Every structure is written in structure tokens, then in C-alpha cells.
Length: 136
Image 1 (spheres, rainbow, N blue to C red):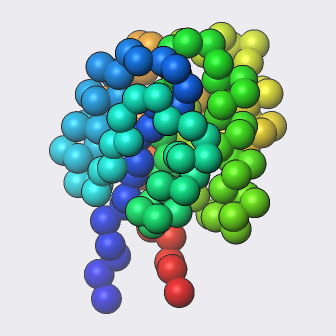
Image 2: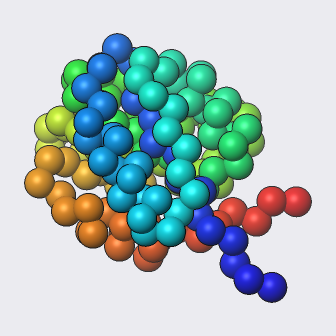
């Protein structure tokens, strides 16, 4: 049996409309061989969690440049946990001050990528740390 491709969702929570980086990541992930779902801008944490479950993703990549990451990222993780989907890996990126990293890790975010992180290192992290979730 062959292992299925990783399914990655890229999502922009909140009111942040700056999505160039998210679109670049979505294309990078596609080029890396992942199945990619891009939700677009202005998604609520509830919409993101519901879409992640519906789309059967392995990874949710959240992008936030507005400063609302301290609320929005943990809320997505919490909603996934409440829906029994805590096997979905949640990572985040954007303009995130280093002093916020630990709060996000404590909330269940598995990795944080900030401007200057290479696309290759993000793909490498995913390849090393995420396996396709086996669904029953």
C-alpha cells in the first residue's frame, strides 16, 4: 500500500487581507507534492477548523500579519481539539514576535515560521514532523 500525499490547508484567519505570502506557500506546498487547500482571506477560527476536518487535512498552516495571532491561532487548535481532530498538525507564520512563540507552542501550535524563513526549511519541517493521518 502506498502512502497517500500529505494534505495541507493554508488559511488566513481574521481580518488580515495580506495574502501574498500565503499564496506563495500554497504554491510551494503544491510543488513539494502535497495536496493543497487554500481557504482565502478573512476566515474565522470556526470556519478554518470546520474546513480542515471536512477536507481531511494533515496540516493547517495559519498566516497572520495583523497581530491577532495570539488569539486566532490558539482558537483554531482549541476548536480542532473540541471536534476530536487534534491529530491535525497546526503551524503558524507571519509577523509574530519571538516573545509570543512560547504562548503559541503552549496552545498547541507545533511550529512557527517568520519572515526570512526559507520555503525549503518549511517543507523540510513538514516532511520530518508530519505523516498522513490514517482515517478510519
